Structures are given as structure tokens and as C-alpha cells.
Amino acid sequence: MGNPEVQAREWFMRVQSGELSDRQQEALADWLCESPENLAAYQHCEAVWEQLGRLDTAEVPVERADRVEGSLWQRFLLAASTRLNGGFFPGWKTSGFALASVTALVFGVLFWNGQPTGPDALKFETSIGEVATYQLDDGSELTLGARSRVRVVMSESVRRVDIQAGRGYFDVVTDPERPFHVYAHDARVEVVGTQFDVLRTERRVTVSVREGIVDVLATDPDQVAAEQPSVTLRAGNRVTKERHETFSAIDTLPEEDISAWRQGRLVYHRASLNDVVDELNRYSSDRFTLASPDLGGIELTASFQIDQLDALPELLSKTLPVRVQKESDGHYILFSANAPYGS
Image 1 (tube, one colour):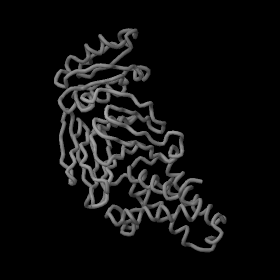
Image 2 (spheres, helix red, strand yellow):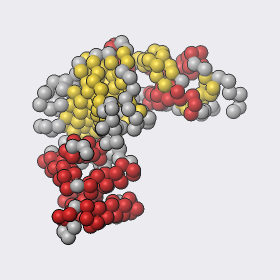
Image 3 (cartoon, one colour):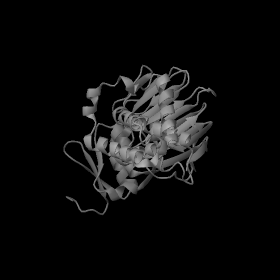
Image 4 (cartoon, helix red, strand yellow):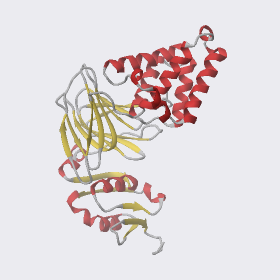
């Protein structure tokens, strides 16, 4: 059995990040019903969050329940009623309090999952090819890469950024009383004050450190008890975490390359072609796609200026075992170098 308070915090942060899958929602329902301690720990997280003006399920109109997916709602209620009324909690069997409490929590999870609320929640977003720098309330700086989107919460006790898409570079003002948290997929970055880069793609999260010390933790409850629930990075270190997988080995790269994109230069060190294509589609109005998923694992080490993307198709053809074909609409398709033309 794990620590209910630790597990509750991980579950609650997962819910707030908007990354809770159907399977994980079912697992949360089961976990809430396992013991009164689990339920109490989760309720404590909600109480703290309410004090920050982030969540107030008591004010949710009853008619909002119509927006909840019926089958998923039924699974939550079935799990709760089976566990509670079936005698899992001996002292609660004849009381409606337990089921009502779990029902309220479940509704909160379903309705608020991924919804930015409260006066402290801000959104920043960039368009294709745009790089923008924002000054946060605590004096920290956030630079967003092209086609990126984040949600920011700053209060007297919380400094939190959720990367919903793309890339962010952080220059964080030191505040030992308020650690700075960055969430992306099922990873959480925790610092006191430092400079680091977080890249979120469809498949993974990559964290690179320019200065200071950064802790990166798994937030998926299935991995919290794993052999490698967290890693510590120092200047020049980088780590990657595939979604729902453990961390990669820590590697090293030149510190100046970590933020090179802020100066208009894209630098790749053993980057997968999947990630390269993902980034190109954030900087270029021309769309790049892979003809086959098998090409996604090809690695690229290269550096080029963002304003010279027109030369990129030729560069890829010369440095990788691929053939780049341009369609009439400006769409580029990457084929294996051995693939026949017209395939």
C-alpha cells in the first residue's frame, strides 16, 4: 500500500492536467473506493485547491451533468456503489455519505478535467513560426516556441505551468518557498530557480537544462512506484520520457544548443524523425508528413537556421535514408530512399 496523501496529490495533479484517459479514470474511481483514507486524502487536495480559487464543484449547475459521458459516469457510480455498499468500508455500509462523497468527487473529475478555471489561470499561445517571450507575475520569463500553448497559474503559494502543446524555455526566479512546476503529458518538472527547456510532442516529453538543477518526476500513478520515478538533471543534461514509459538515460549536449531555437537556430542531437517533423510543422506553413511510421525512428543530428527552411528537404535527402517528395499544394512527404516513385 502506498502513502494515500502522496497518491492523492499525484491523482489530483493528473486530473488538473487534463491528461486522464478512460482507463485511468476507472482506476481513480477504484482507488477512491478502496479506503476512507484515500477518499479523505483526495478531499484534502480539493480543499487546498479551492483555497487557491481553482476549483469549486459546489457551484456547478446540476444541468451540467448532461455534458458528462453517460457510460463513463455509470462506470464510476457502479464502482463506487459496489465497493461501498458491498461492505468494503464496514462503518459506512448503512450511510449515504460515502457514496455521495465519491459521487461528488467523480463529477468534479469528469467536469473539470482539463478546464482552466479561476482568476489566476492565464493562457499563452503562439502561431506557426512565432516565438514570443512573456514576463510572469513572479518575475520569471517564459519563451514559447512556434505553435505552442500553455496554461499558467501564479498565486502566493503556487507557480505552475501546463504545457499543452509545443515548447517552452523557462528562466525561473529563485523562490525556495514556492517551487516552480511545469507539467507536460505524464511528467512534472520541479525547480526552485533555474533555466531549462521543455519540449512536448505527441509521443514524448524532453527536458533539457541550461543552468542549475532540475528534478523531473513521473506523474502517472502507474509509474510512481516504479524503479525510476524521478531523475535529477544538471546543466547540459537532457532526459526524454515517452508517454506512459520510464525515463530514458540522461545524455549531455552543449548548453548553448539548448536554447538555440530562441536565436532562430534549430539544433538536433540524435533526434527522431518523428520529433523533427513535428517541430518543422510548427515553424513552416508547408506541411511535412512521413509516408510510413517506420521512418519515425530514424535519428538526425543537424543544425540549421529557421529562416532557411526552404533548403531543408534537400538537406534531409542528403543526410538521411529518405526521399522527400513535394506535392502540388506545397505538402512534403518523406519516403524511404528505397521506396519506388509513385508509392
